[in-house]
Image 1 (cartoon, helix red, strand yellow):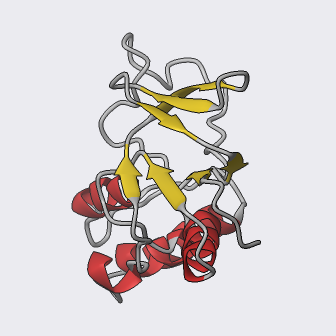
Image 2: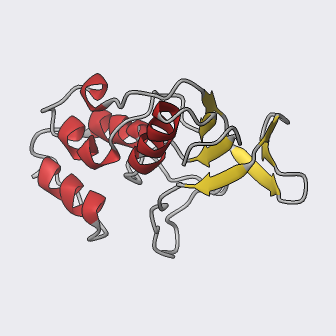
Image 3: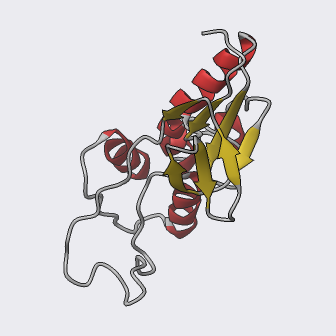
Length: 161
């Protein structure tokens, strides 16, 4: 795809970053939007960070030229704009959703605090912040329970073993 039509990619994971970089190499104007404060990174390698084998910067991905760090809260298909939490609107000619998945947290009574947050000692494992938070609480000889058998869950269990 070579075009002057701006492509906006929502999601700064591996798929979104690779697509944005490739389109940029082909001369297509592209904007990548990711909500995390960290530079884009390879999420599959989070368990290596948790295990202490890699530092976070090792799993960083080369970012495309135009990276916007914002949470997308809406898409105006008629106006062809993406609306961000801070009120910014980003125009697009083509839109790609590369947001991946979110962790499925089981509907267990008492799992969340009254503000709908996870209590201290309970962690999701999808983002670098999740990984760093869990890593800060890992102690030798202390048991951990991993609920979930997806790629990241199994990787986290292996890293904690």
